Image (cartoon, rainbow, N blue to C red; front, side, top):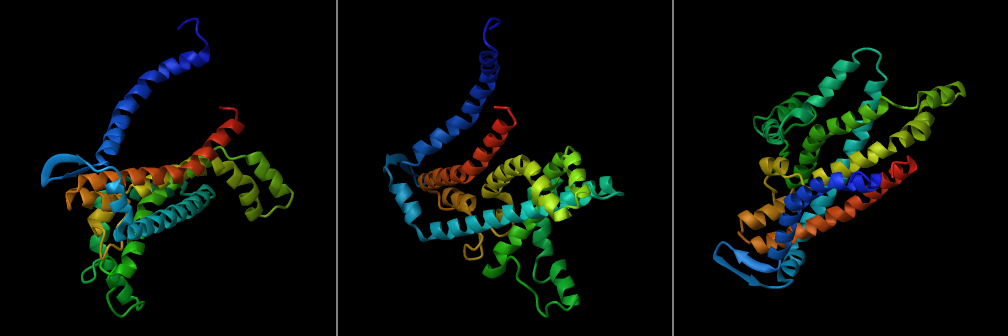
Length: 296
């Protein structure tokens, strides 16, 4: 490889990583795809080829559309609010003169707590009878009765979105804060000298500069939120009345509650397709930014 081109040498050094990724990720995906065409339950160890029957049964089921709706609300609302609050917090802390280091530490704390611990903590605080949130709401006069945050189909999904927001916003804060360390100070100072207001600087200078980081962080947040399992399962297990049932929750229940591994595998394939379609715009944005910067 000493006489080879730099590009060829780069591919050669990447080959071990690619082979490891293919073995670790490729085999489970292919195996899951194969299983999705078979009928396989714990009641019978025989795997019977059924073609697209599992896909038809999953997509045609009533719970599938409820699950898709919940997943869309959970993901779209969650990622959007994470982005808005995370960027706002990062900009606020970045403009602080004193206490910047301490504020960064405080904001990052929720992200460092394990997901199951976060879920159990908020599940206890949101309990209707002994939860501190209901206690504070009633003491402040905002309500005269306990709110069933995790037991009422109306409040359950917004409640778990809020908990996920509390945990996920620090990741956005961290990424945006890191990007703001190299913000274009000369352009900002020139705009200020020209009499531009902060909102104009934010829209025309800072946000365009942050767009590559926002795209990358959005892609990661979307994938993580779509696949988030432990928080919802620990707090509501997909209930009440499937009001918080998302694709990972429904897939898990098909496999380990109903013992239908064929349909669970089919739903996992459908989830993979949906995640891929959702992330395509993010990936395109990342690659276009890399081309503009001359990296690709």
